[in-house]
Image (tube, rainbow, N blue to C red; front, side, top):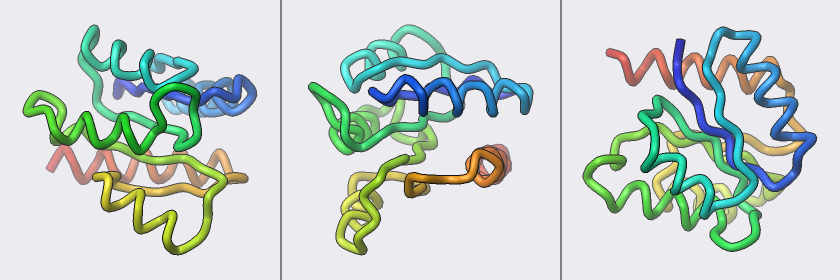
Length: 124
């Protein structure tokens, strides 16, 4: 069972992702913005973080960059979830340090598979 943080300002997306990951046996914490995401990362051990790019306050890109710049969280797996699908947007996501990039709308099954695949690679 992995400990997963979801940060998305859209409650419907947060609930959907949390539901699907809970079904997969993961322990999920859900927050509504980037500031709360950074707080959650500091307060609890996590195995993976899912970040929406467009959030009030700190964007998912900002959160990802901050995670990568800190020794304690530099290797924490990060998946960006966003409606931004242009090639340049994807490049920005990976340049910020994301391990994966999922475009909305997405299949909950695909998201679950990508989470599992990333967690499996990290465990090796």
